[in-house]
Image 1 (spheres, rainbow, N blue to C red):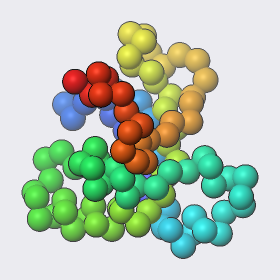
Image 2 (image 1 turned 30 degrees about the vertical axis):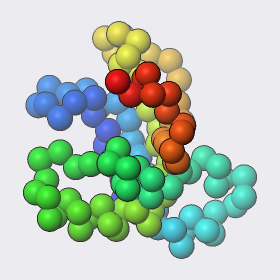
Image 3 (image 1 turned 180 degrees about the vertical axis):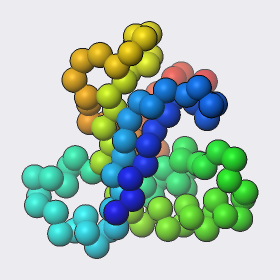
Image 4 (image 1 turned 120 degrees about the horizontal axis):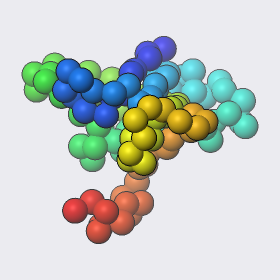
Amino acid sequence: MRQCLIYDTPEADAKLIGLEYIISENLFLTLPDEEKPLWHSHLYEVKSGVLFMPRVPGPIERQDLEKVCKTYGKTIHFWQIDKGDNLPLGLPQLMMTLTRDGQLDDELAR
């Protein structure tokens, strides 16, 4: 299992806003059925270019992302920075991601 810290920017003063647990497809398949909907595949994120690794050289990034394609993630955000709060307020939230074309409104992507 991998554990990824999620920051709001790649800058030195970035805010830690979440955490993602990443597991193999084999482990995902052993999860109870009621748990599986809380996880998302990384295949679309990688293939669409949504998921990337800032400041990692291209060949290393591609090699690692090929491994990530075959994994599943469970992401918890504890700071919704888009609300403008100066600190993490409220309950942490389970977050999902895009898993296929057509899920993102084209206007939001611009």
